[in-house]
Length: 379
Image (cartoon, rainbow, N blue to C red; front, side, top):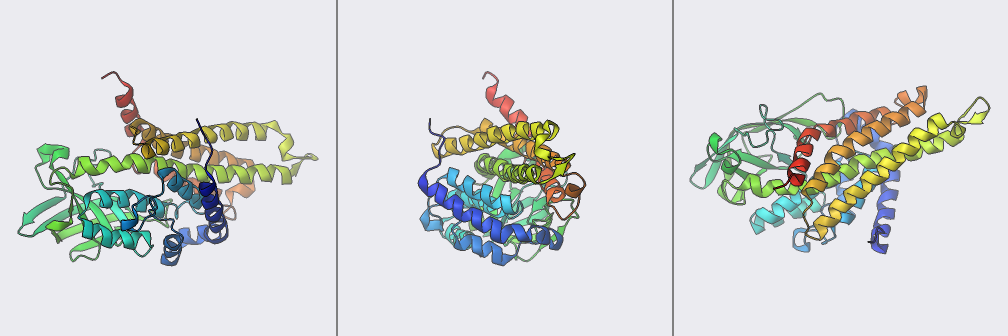
């Protein structure tokens, strides 16, 4: 068993960490206030090779392993949790497009995504569905060489910033459930598409909203995978993104811990540094242990994926534990800073708002625990 990162991974981490601290962290609050991730920042990520690196070179990637992709998202998220969502979306959608889209279509969009010129979102959730992801009503009807899409997607991250969407639509009957769902690659400037944005408490730089499809014509060649099998084929990619989400959230937790350990050595009370008070250090020590363990769990899931081993349960563990733990850690760090931690001059309140959303999005804790139980119950 080898728990060390190799020399190349450590070099990549160092470069990304510097970029995150110097370029991303100073703009964390501003992006939240303005509700946008600047295209210039996304292009910089692409120029540095930080988007979709695990994809083959023919699609604009470098064939890096998934563990290294996890390192990249972890370091980016330390500086700006929301910017960390860009490589995550590129990896999730990139693997779906590379595996299931027509080769020419895949090359066209993936080169744009890996270079930071284009952003993709994934449009699965519908207003009445929530966790019942297969209960879709957005209809795709075949008419000659096109499919005509009608309906609504909701709670879609980057809905009003994305250039293209991976859209799940029903090509079969409602009674067919997952067996009647297909996936399409849909440019967001296609006539008939409109979007709205919600007023959320967190992740404002990413933005969450609805996408409306009103007689949207999509070429039949834009279907990904086989008709009626898109849901089952594409949903496998979420095992990868769940491990990345765990690291995205835990990065915020670790950054908050590092800042708070430092704070305890600088602040004094009753003639002593705060680090002398076990009431402050013991909770941090406990959470530092949990973060270390959860982080190793995430990298274990990515290692399993790199080695083509089952990782369904491990990925689900990452998804429910990482966001919950990150929220608890940031809260404790905020409290350790006292009244100064509650102000907007420090990032703790914003981090709380941002990480809380991922206890809901991309699969709730209850759904993740269902997955874990299904894997461990005797067959």
